[in-house]
Image (cartoon, rainbow, N blue to C red; front, side, top):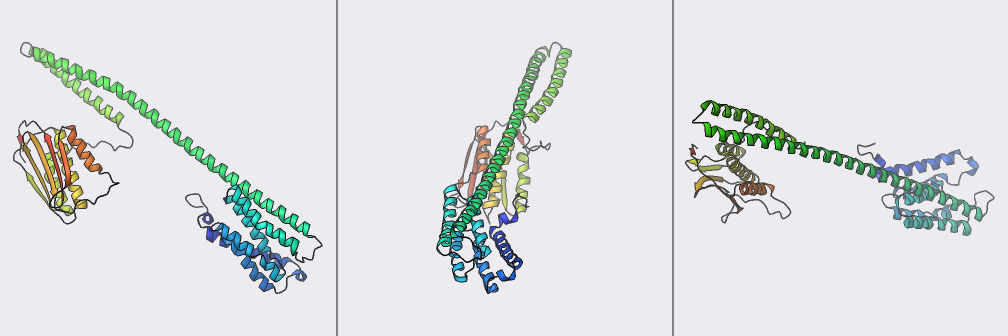
Length: 397
């Protein structure tokens, strides 16, 4: 048995049927040798050679069933030439009848059975062979008819059983998938319920902090002790709120998502290190950063970093022998980032969706910015992002 559950002769039908044909010939030889010598046919080696020829259609029974039926009909000329019908010929007709009944629908299977056995019956009536037995043509025809019906019936029964087993396996697979889906749905429903409860808890804590902050501001000049107590309560409440937020994120995170990374998220300060990594990977990068760069929200800083990271990664994969330039600056109250390269750019693929570019657009749109991407007029590729910011100071580059 293989890993997929199929036997090797199912995976390699030609080799398996070739061995099966050899077994038919061996059976013919054994049957002949066990028969008394006076019943042996004349020119025994010649007859055994024709027996091999009669077994050839069995080799093709699965890879080319209809040509195998035609080849089997052609072997009906052998008894007329030899005056003897090899046992292999009869066995081959039985095997082909069974195979067509197993592998084909009713009409093709019946047609193949009729096509195989009607000529046999006709030959038994018109040119019966001298078998040494006192039997008439009617007996031979009836015997062949019953044999053909038995092979056909066995084949149809096996086909019905296989169909039933496939249906049962499919039903079990669907039931297992449904059970898994129901279990996942139950987990998701429970997570949503817990998330709603934690949301209410967090909202309550935030409201309490707001009320305490208002009270502390009002009594700050009149009662420092009361203000200090309120601020201490805000401090404790904020810690509780942070823990609840972490639990909320743990609940909302699916099993397929990786565990949270405890390292700080990258930002504007990490762009220089990112450019150096890309240089080491083989793409020369020129970094031009305006001085000073405004101190912006962590989310905007992370967005700019991800845009530069995605643009340089695409340039590294698609630009070929090229140079990339990263320009970061401030203009009209907006933080601008431009990443260009001098390479050939990505190849056009109509069916491919650029998830990296979609992610850039989503990140920029979240902060009310704009994003333009596309080929440069002089060759290469250009990524331009413009994000509104409110400078609150400056940080060194």
